[in-house]
Length: 116
Image (cartoon, rainbow, N blue to C red; front, side, top):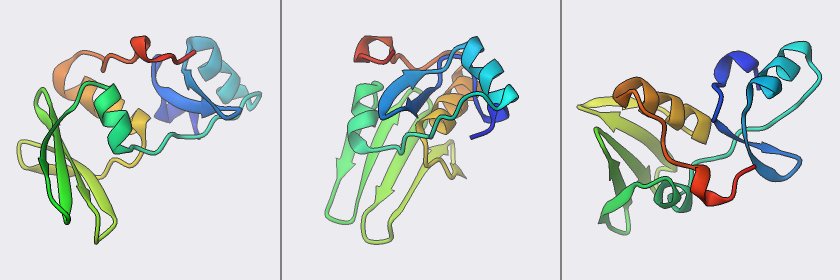
């Protein structure tokens, strides 16, 4: 991952643990002194981040949080975010966090979920 993809507070995987990015982590990534990997968005993660499941069928499910929907298409293997008709391919938590911040001007609440 590149430091330019991340913001302070983004969730990533660091040595098999969920980890919140700090300014020190970004500096380490810029110097090449650290490696982190993205966390794939799952339905469990969406619930933990405050999304509400609003639709579920054998073909797909839909989750919603303020101004943003997230779709899982099981048979196609697709998943994406949708904001007012604009489809955005988001596969990883940090991408979703950045999108949510861009749309709402606030962070997704993750502190209460045991991340370092």
